[in-house]
Length: 110
Image (tube, rainbow, N blue to C red; front, side, top):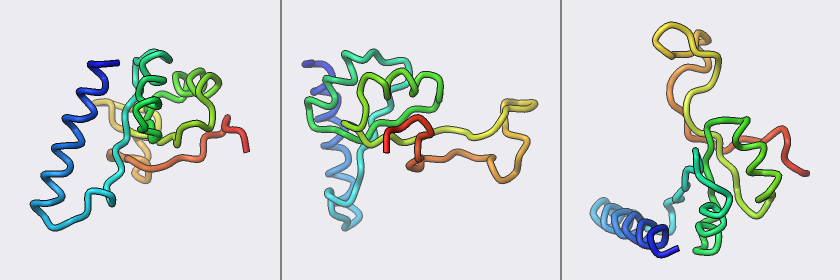
């Protein structure tokens, strides 16, 4: 857990310095830890540290993680939406461009 907690502390310090510099409150920023390719054990360490906003950009990966982690975390869908076309971009203009938004996971327990 030492490496993960050190990384989180370092990111939080950078967020704190940045918010102070621009006159915003640190508390108004949400740190979303991306779980892409990370193990359940690593994700549990992040949760133990007190970070509950998790981001995933592969629904297939997120489904298994959600089964094991569940509603302990606030899940966010990140990345590009839609089927990739030439150059890896979505062919649907409404779905093109990066997103970083909360998503109501279809497999989430209500």
